[in-house]
Picture 1 (cartoon, one colour):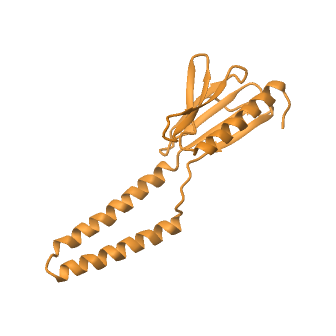
Picture 2 (cartoon, helix red, strand yellow):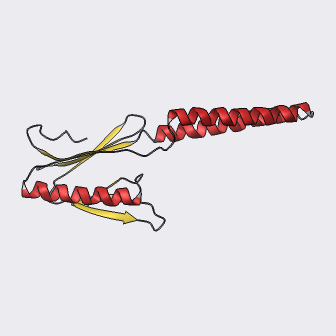
Picture 3 (cartoon, one colour):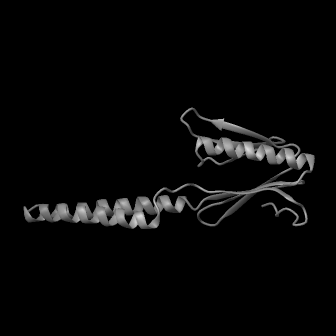
Length: 164
């Protein structure tokens, strides 16, 4: 993993990319209370008509929704850190488990390219000397375009040695 840029060097870009999650903890609690209440009421209705095993399946539905949301929130802890100085472009990906993987590029040689797959999904490719790293795959198309443009501008500033 690359070491951080020299603290005496000015930073031209210091960004943290994180996935967006539209449902916060409070909304998640309300959603789970709603699903639990509806499932319990429907399950009791079936139990009163003699189909009591259905009540357990409604509980499994609520459990499946809960587990799905918890896994989604865990995946949302992924982040990518991009730091650019005059001498280095460092990219560090921090996985939900806490594992860190990093790459380092020389700013003069790095190319920033937008890649799309036609389904509105894609990534930003950082390429140099036969190596390529994909970043920002969880961003929207507009966010990827904005970040790529900002990174290109920061690279141009770093190469002309005009700090922000």
